[in-house]
Image 1: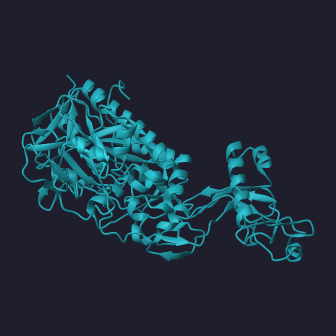
Image 2: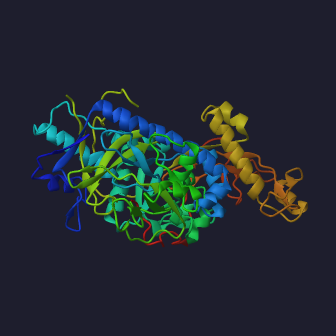
Image 3: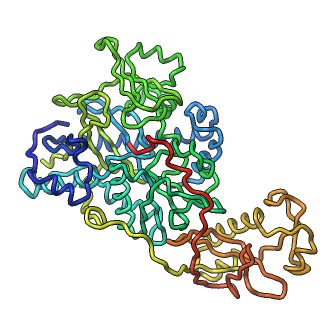
Length: 390
Length: 170
């Protein structure tokens, strides 16, 4: 893994806008940043990222087995009691899921370490699946990269295939979220595009327009029943809202399904560590009230069970830092976990995080984000990668 | 998995993004079917044995929970005939001690653009061969294939999701 300087295409903004990449620049800051790229070897991608991703996913499935059978663990993860049975049922039934993103720290040498699993509402999907792919093809066409260059990125193909498996031609998918959020809207539009290419019908709706009919089906603003709802809106919020109670009774199929509550939760990390201690891709992690937190000797990251985009994370390294590094935010009241500090690798002035995607239970590709601080947050930049064909 | 050669999608094309907006859905008839039981469904050869059986189980479950219920056996028999009724147990939404018709057929469930209906239990009035859904509406005159114009549903309540301000992706 190397970070190399690249020639920025003078017209990339035009290309980005033409394909619907609405958030390539946010608040005047670059989000898409092609002034650099990360280069990997094929063998490195397969042994250090792709295989560990498949392995981590199978560990996660084992964890869902444990968590969904244990009301005590679910309580610890702040999954409301009323949903314990529904979570277990959705896992037992094998309700299909669509996708997720493992956030990994990898510096080009040691094993990648899992920070967390964004198993419910991951974004940064479109740029990884599409715009990054276009970038590679364009750079090859313009002669900046060898024609042999490849990319760890079969996201687009796998998403279409996943929608074929999830529904096929008879299914209408409703894609719901907070549509005024440009990034969420783009992710929903992209997934709807993939569903359409899979032969499904797709309808984009506002999450607050969802209604309930007499038989507990979810409905849209046109009084049409929602057979399958893809929601880019956290399950942990939905279960705490007025209609949450319907999630355990509705015949509407949910994607992601309720069992994802056990994975899109930082409580997963201590559960994994207890099940698979010393696994090379895991970091020691404990619930905040676990006496073993003392083993970390203060070199630790404290994370709320439920949070997004780095919010409310506190990073402490007594050896090098006088004050903890803290990101403000609205999360944390449900409880916290403590994870051994493993700083992101630095490339130039950037702290680099690897997002390793899974689609329908398979490793599917990679997107890399850099930030100016060790906690990757809303100021991160997306930097493309390629696999050296030489 | 490792060792598959090329790691990227062969082609990436977009149908709707950038240039086109998402449309809604258009109306369309839905193919389904009515059968007396799972065996009759399988024998007809349109749906596979597994679909026949699982839809039957689901219809039967809906029947046991939500079949039209009458306070007395006589009331039920007036509609469904002398041998057409059975008492409920406490699974039924009305509780034990009521009377419901026998389920004499079921509708294959379908998921369509307009409506999503699960498999439904069907009933027959005394002296009529027509299959009726629980509301009493006739849905078919005989077993076999069936095309339906699915009706829209009625939203009872709205706006119960989306209240949490930070509820977005990340």
